Image (cartoon, rainbow, N blue to C red):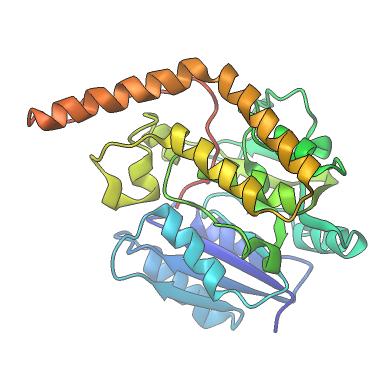
Length: 319
C-alpha cells in the first residue's frame, strides 16, 4: 500500500490540469497513489487524465456517469484512498516538488498531529504571484497549533481566514472519522474545525503550495452565498437553503462527537455562542432571505438573486 493517497476531484479542468498533474508527479516523495475522480467533464479532461494514467501506474482514473457535485466528488476520492496519509488536490493548484516529502516528515515527527501543511502563495491565471490577501491576525503557523482542542476550534471557525489547509496532508484514519465535505456552502471550514478537535495542525515554514485564484473559481462563479450550495450538490439547485444556520448545527454536532474532555466541550460551545452572537446580522439576513425565497416558491415565482457574503467563505477549490 502507498503511504500517501492524493485525491484529485475535477470537472472541466482542461485549462490547468496538465500543470497540476506534472507538479504532483514531480514530487520528491514517490510512494503515493493519485486518484482522479472526473465529475462527468464535457471538455478534454477525460482525454488528459486517461493519457496520464496510461503513462504512470500510480494514477487511477475514475469517471462519474453524471455530475455528483463538488461535495460528493471530493468525498469519493477519500473512499477510494488506501494510504496512511491523504491529500486533496484541486485541478488548478500546484505544489513544489518537496511538498509531500516535507509534510510526511512533519507528521512522522509529531504523532499527535492530524494535518500538515506549508506556507502558501496565491497565484493568478498565468502563475504570477498575487499580493497576500490573508486577513487573519492569527498566523498560519499558530492557527491550529494550540494544545487545547477548544482553542483550535475557536481559531478554525473564524471567518477571517481562508481554508487552504484543507489541501494539506491529513491522517486518513482521522479524516474518515469526520463527516468530510458536506453539501452546503463553507463546509470545508466545518471540516477543518472538526479535524482540529482531533489533533493539532503542523505548518512547514516554507511556501510550497501555490493556490490559484481565477475567474472560473467556485467563489467567483457562485458569488451568491445561497447559489453556491448548488456547486456542492447540484440536486440542491433552486431549493431553499440556510447554509450558515446549517453550519452552526454541524459544528455543534462535531463538538458532541469529538473525543475531547468535558471542559473543552463546554468551552467549544461557549465560543460558538459568542461567535453566533457576532454573526447575528448574517444569521438574521440568511433567515430573511430563506423566508423570502420560500414565499416566492409558494407563489410560483422564480428564485431571486440571494445574498452575496462580504465575509470570506471557505475555499474548497474548483471541482
